Length: 367
Image (cartoon, rainbow, N blue to C red; front, top):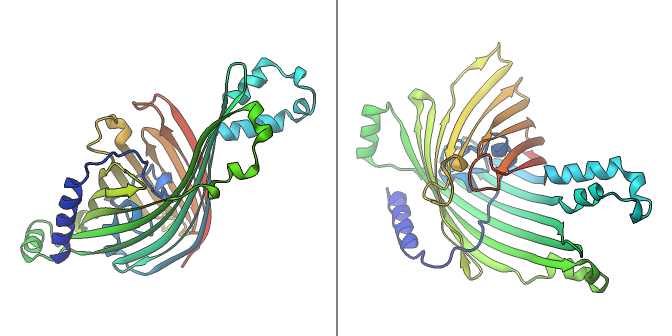
């Protein structure tokens, strides 16, 4: 009861004070498991990802979990295609530039290179969670009609989230659940985040590189911006239909440097039927649906929808699939040790306009 009052009061105070420019992108953690499931995780929230997707999930974790460390690497299909192109044409690039065709130049100049890496450690369970997450990314493109121009953006975020959740214990509410939903319970949670951000966003002409030192490309030499933020989450567990219904209000009030981050209100539903299939070969089926950025009028409805599924195969392999903003996603996990996911991100205004296919892999241990 006390936690619920505090969360509602905090959200109202922070929302009414949200009158500054929201120019900074969120400091978020997109984990490989939810990505394989089409990004749908608000109502699943049953591991360390609850710290970012829905802190209310911390209240229903049955045991403590230590993930140390998790290493991840991510790139887009354009970068994969460019690397393959260089491998297939090694001999051509050992010769003179005069041997290049216009198609070679176009292939390189049209490439949109994106490389991301991340490192994380977390400790979650029994209502509480804490972690340290570092996300680094680089976007590079080459343009210019007469003089080659290199555009690059480098970002490095370090996030320290601390989350807490508990059951909302209101006798009248629980009596209603007992009478109408056969023992359903509501949980609420909050994540507080400390953020450190460094970034470079620049453009250079080709002839400028002869006078540029390596230090000018070192993101660690840039003055960091510090920030803080809060996420709120609610999760209703309905055991009679093996379902979770959840709401998450991420970045209720978040500032990084002098700017703010736009809040993101999302809804989630997860269906988790009990039992095994095919004599225990398949188990732990999860079906999930998320709708994010509900109140953002600049995003079309289909770009807000994320849906996916996960199932275990012989208790060792996890197979995942879904649709991320309308584009298919796929994931495969070997325990908590090795995971892979591919998904598509919509770069345009409406679904199906401009897809950026992404591949990500992670390596780590969980106890």
